[in-house]
Image 1 (cartoon, rainbow, N blue to C red):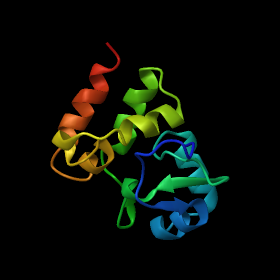
Image 2 (spheres, rainbow, N blue to C red; image 1 turned 45 degrees about the vertical axis):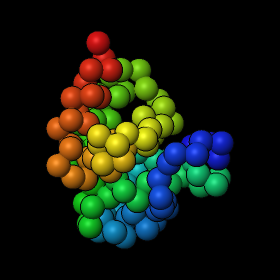
Image 3 (cartoon, one colour; image 1 turned 180 degrees about the horizontal axis):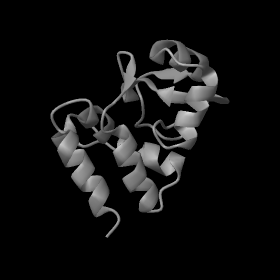
Image 4 (tube, one colour; image 1 turned 60 degrees about the horizontal axis):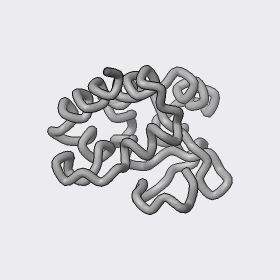
Length: 116
């Protein structure tokens, strides 16, 4: 994500820390990124994952499905990240935060609508 974008994650997690947090190998983290279960972009020159996309020792439950919907709609990783962090007060601040709460269904519905 380019530094010119003002809306974005409050915190970032590098891939080795994601590996430790999830209790999986670093190669498994890379596989999860390739498979669309996680979203990683270059931030400050290092591939990182927004901290809000991780819940305790797991990935947010609905994140893989939303990422699939966004990719099906033609979004690349950076565009998906921008969409997830676009300010939206109806989604607890933005879609990424909404995924972690009771707005997850609405986030999924909106992502699905992008494909039409």
